[in-house]
Length: 208
Image 1 (spheres, helix red, strand yellow):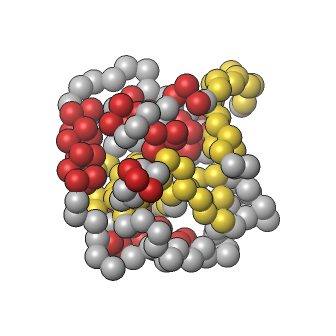
Image 2: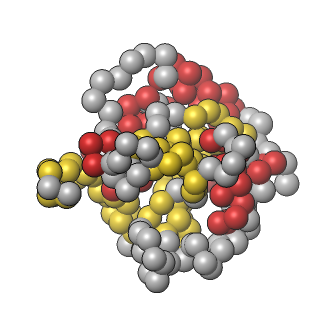
C-alpha cells in the first residue's frame, strides 16, 4: 500500500499553512500546573485519506488500557516522550508504529502545530499527518486497548464539545470533552484538537 498523495494532502497543507500564518491568543494550555522543566513529547494526529463518498476523512485515536499505571483508560493520539536525538516528527511516527504498527513510510506529514504544556510535566508537539484509509492497524496490548476513527468534520467542530471547570492542584482548571460512540475525548487530547481547530477551517472544508 502506498502513502497518500492526493487532493487531501494538498488541501490540508494549504489550510495548515494559512492557519499557522497568524498569531492566536489564548490557546489552551496547562502550563500553570506544570513544573519548570517539562519533558519534550510528541503525538501523531493521523488523518485518513477517506473519500467523501465513504464518509470523508477522519482522525485515528486510541484508548489506553484500564490497567495502565498512568492515564488508564484515557483517549489519546498515539505518542510519547522524545528519545535522545529525535525531533517531534520522528518521535510521533515512531510512537504510532509502536502503538498501532502504523508504517511511518505511509504517513504524509503535514506539519507540527502548537505545542501543548500538560499539567503532568510534558511539552507535547502535535504532528498532523495523512495516512491511507482502512489500514490493518494492530494495537500494542501494553499501550493500546482499542483504536477508533472520528470524522474530521465532527472532531474539529467546537460546538460538539462541552466546557467544564474543576479544581486541580489548588487552582481552577478549564477543560473540554466530547463523547463519540462510547469514547470520552477530553483533557489534553481535546485541548490539542480545540487549539488545532482554531488553526484549521476543518468544518468548512470537510463537510461540516
